Length: 302
Image 1: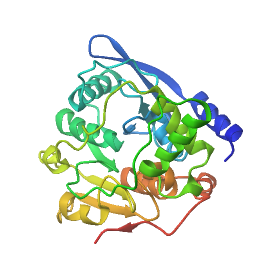
Image 2 (image 1 turned 180 degrees about the vertical axis):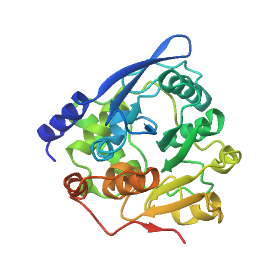
Image 3 (image 1 turned 90 degrees about the vertical axis):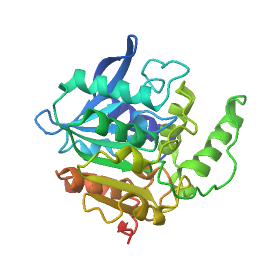
């Protein structure tokens, strides 16, 4: 996808959203984009990862919005939302999410919740503390207690500008977020670089501070864990023992030929998995579009 088409795609999807604001902390505003049919229940909330925004879900929104009412926030300190205090951590983000969900739906309204990377950790805390989460899906979430697999050093980009800054961000996109350079098109770059440059929240290292097993111990509803085969923040083939441990309520899948940013790099498989997990359907036309770069079907870790 070329830059002009990428810009048009982002603008079209953004224009199709209903924009809402909720309050968090001492009066900050948290921005939400809402998509899909109003009568689709329960709502499906998509929570982005660190150094991200709603754009982390840019290849998932249109297919999922066919049958789901989607609520997609920018967390405090990210994207278009107001900043969080300098000392804020996962607890602060979780508090903001719970307060916002209660403002949007009321404290007892059931939702489905999907979180990517740091957003998965935030979603795990929300599911445990708020309750009323019917289905929980955690994608590329840290805290699996499996070895990281570094793919090279990240490059500093803040002190660069122009072509040098773009080169550094593209380098980081491939080192941390994606497996295959051919997938790092203009849409991937925009959906990665724009949120990175807008981030005011220090999230490095906080996501995996507490193991997911420990966070989720009180949660008894169904959980789906999804990891890209080549995710650098963990070793996905070891995650099933750690995260599901033969619990029939907890399913762990590895998506082939994807890095950490599995909702983008393998949007076809992720969209299918979330629809099956949360219920609903994707129309044939949108399914074909989401599978333009389709690869072998996802496999469960065994």
